[in-house]
Length: 195
Image (cartoon, rainbow, N blue to C red; front, top):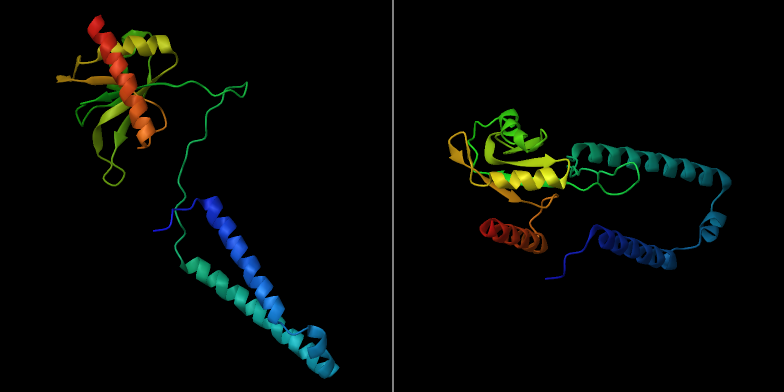
């Protein structure tokens, strides 16, 4: 099985193929000067008009085909948030798990309000069914509030023991990200045990 190519590599490959095809077709082509010299002036003009009409029909057909084909959905990606200096803004995000499905974002924010600020809460929902998944991400303005909020691990919220853990913003399922999260949470666990 050939290796999977990136978009950039596919584009380059297509370009090279088109250039190769173009070179081959030009080698086999008969010079237009030879063809035109054999025909009278009036037939040359008629042929030009025919070619123009055919080109217009081809363009209309290709537009119709493009409209019939469903457009590919582009992935919505959030732009990187930068502060006024052009530097990347540090994000202080926690994962909160084992929530009831009827949990409201405002209630969860109030639960964490005692750390010193009202955090931003994102409750995760299923894309198709729009039902809650039972976990959320909470974002704080600074690391001081985040470290205070980590103390809420295994506390009770709506009669359930919640899990509060570190996470790396951005998502994804790459092995490198999983390893990074595992190391962060192991270090956090050691700190919790030592306290």
